Image 1: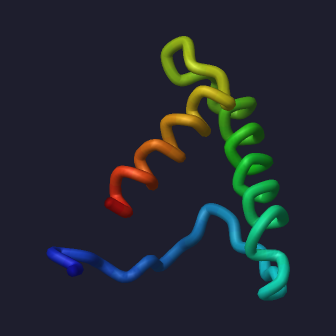
Image 2 (image 1 turned 60 degrees about the vertical axis):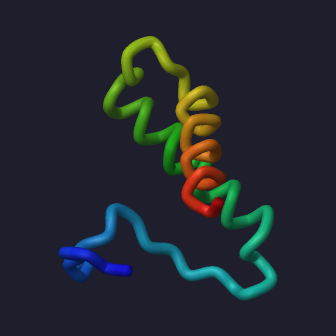
Length: 65
């Protein structure tokens, strides 16, 4: 469902990958982006990038239930 959804006009980062790269390569790219984002922005509260990654994964799991 797309209640009030708007098309994405600008991506923060876009990188093409091959279908066989969807697993480990995609995860590595997302982790690298998060590490770099936290390094530029600073921590979120007292959370490290690893803790933010864990929260991200928990949110994705909850949304897929």
